[in-house]
Structure formats: C-alpha cells, structure tokens
Length: 291
Image (cartoon, rainbow, N blue to C red; front, top):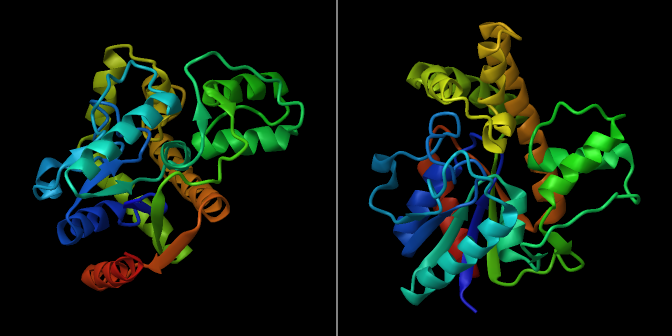
C-alpha cells in the first residue's frame, strides 16, 4: 500500500506553502481538502492558491464545480479516491492539504457513503452535541434550543452518511502532518489575513455574487461570504461584517484543532515564521523517516 501525506491545521497557518514544497521534494501532487475551494469564483475569501504559487506542481479538486452546485461529502469522496488512483499510477505521492476534516475522513477512512437520501432524528444526541457536530462542518446561527432546525441542518450535512461504524479506520497508509502556532500568533495571522483579503478585492468578489442573487449553500455558510451578504442586505455595518469575519475565522480555527486532535493521529509541528524553510526541512525529515 502506497503512502499518502495529509497536511492539516487551522486556517492561515501555512498549509498551502508546505504542501507545494513537499510536493517538489517528494515527487508529489496536491489534492485539495478544503470544502470551499472546490467551487469556482470563491477565490479571495477562501484563500485559494494562485496559479503562480503552484510552482508547476499539479493540483487537483480545485475549481471543479459551480458555486450554485451542492457539492457533497459523497461527491468529494468519489472524486478524491479517483484522483488518488490516478496519481499513484504515475508513481507519485498524493498530498492532501486543507482544513475540512470531514472531507479528509470521508476520502481516506472507512466512511460508508451513498447517494441515497438519509434522515435521522438524532435522538441519541443532545442539542449541544447536535450543535457541535454542525460546527465541525461550518458556522451556524441556529440557536442551541432550536432542536428542529439543528436536526434538519445536521441531516443536510450527513445526508449521504448511512454507515459510519468504522469511520476511524483508514483505508490507506496515511501520514498526517499538522501545522500549529501559539494561539495569539494564530489570531494575529487570521486578523491580518482578513484585512489582506479586503485589500485584494474580497468585497468586490462577494458583491459580484450578491448581484447575481446567488444564495447557494456554499455562499450562505462560507466565512467571508455570509457576513458580507448581511452587510449588503443592510443588516450590519461594514465594520461589523469585517469584525464578524475575523471572529468566525478564529472560532473556526478552534474547532479545527478540536476535530483533528480527536479524529486523527496527527504529528504536530510548530511553525517557524521567521524561517519557514526550517519548518519544511523538519517535516521533510520526519516524512522521509516514515517512508
């Protein structure tokens, strides 16, 4: 069984840069594991890798569907496993990179999925547990006491999940690398990144979608998009929207840590932002030893 590398971590920590460098050094190809970066036209708000940043490395499952589409975990599982096979036929190393834990689990672990309709009342889960499960996938405004809406939302997420009894059993020989940093440093990175997105045209990107009256799941749940839609609807001020994007991004980062620490066997590396090459070399040394 050939090995697969998985690079995880909170938003903004440096996963994209590491994935490209490892691919160059290990004869690899990159597979997107971010649930928002599969959509076309969601570029700035998702921090999608730019063409020049790929440095000639093949990248897969980016920009593969229209923003109006409802791309599901089932769809991703089928696409990701197909791409793994194609990469391995070329005798290259598949390198997954992204922060969407459910996507990674569905692709690489024994998630039994189907395109048939699925429904559950989740009687075994409390309202708090329902909310926690939903927040592993995306932010939500649903109140913890509104069980009916919580159940409906979780059914949307797990609509294609029919048997997850062995979801912690990997189907491949995987090595999971996690990038991390101090909490204050991470929050500073996230806040600065939101400001940079605004400078690079985030408002114009979202306004273009808003003017087209696109209200798909990707837009209404995506951080950076749903907040600015509220601004365009005159529900909040511009300053409130930007602060909300930063707050939701920080909260999402906390949930990412929780998911990865509880759901995967991750080897964590503290990022050296003063010399990122040192972090790359450290990870490369570890991976080669595992290989």
